[in-house]
Amino acid sequence: MARIVNESVRLIEEFGRVKPTVRTILYQLDNQGLLNKSKKYDADSLSEHLVGARKVGLIDWDALSDDATVTLGTLYGYWSANDWLDDAVYSLRNTVEEYGYPRWHKQQHYVEVGIEKNALAGTFESILEGKEVVISVNRGFSSWTFFYHNAERLREAIDDRCDGIAKNCHVLYFGDMDLSGDDIMIHLAEMKEYFGLEGIDFRKVAVDSPSIKEHFTKMGLRFTGKDRLIPTLPAKRPNSNKPNVIAAWKKRRARYMAERDTDLTIQLDGFLAADHNAFERLVVDSVDKFFSKKIYDQAQKELEEERSTIPRLLRRKVAELSDEL
Image (cartoon, rainbow, N blue to C red):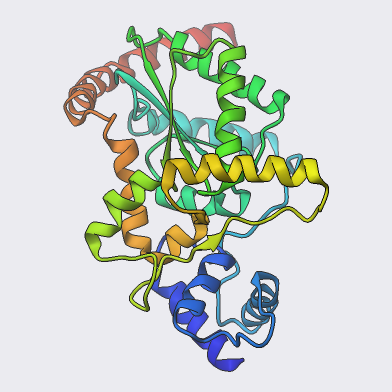
């Protein structure tokens, strides 16, 4: 067990700023032949041992992306009136440096990232740090309420004319390549049509056959073999033995195989486990392809010009405030 924990610590450190999930580490341990096949050792077992490693300080508490909980509400601390005003004055003194444009200001595209698994939210957040894109987690089959709120946000982004640019909207989706993953895409397509979002470019970036062939096969990564294996599983049969359930599953499996010529499935965590650097490049490149450095640089020049007007505007507004007081 100590060997598994020590190797897990090494693997987590190897990921650097990208946060892996427990399942990602499990896949890598399995690839290295460190898991006892005669014993059931799953993500829950590994998570239990990694909690122990965190308790003794071998792993930072924030090193893994595995938080499936939600905390609501905000804790407000007490500020005296003098401290509150000092903070306001400090902000005014640093207004020129603190004022800035959103990264996508005047860009022709608006981009969001959608992911299937909540456990990977921290992974994507670390990969896309500084990109200023919304990351939406649907946790499998989205509820209609969840999609309604997403649709409202997307419409707002498209209709936003504060910078005078009509946006082309793109939602880049990352999920498992399995039967349920295909069903989720059909489900999302139905929601997209119902809410009138046909003009939005909604695409699945990974995991799917094209992305695997394009980004992994050319790197020498394979579905089989010991060299940086991409973990695969056969399509999972339903637990029920009812004829109608089995018949529906066989129909879904046949559709899946017709598109890929295999019934092997790949989890998004397994895609990440195969080569986290390649996975990071895939995520970043899929977003950056819609970002214009030329437009950004021009916007930064305009920002500097606008910043130069702040001292004059600030003096005028302070004078107006002084008259009111």
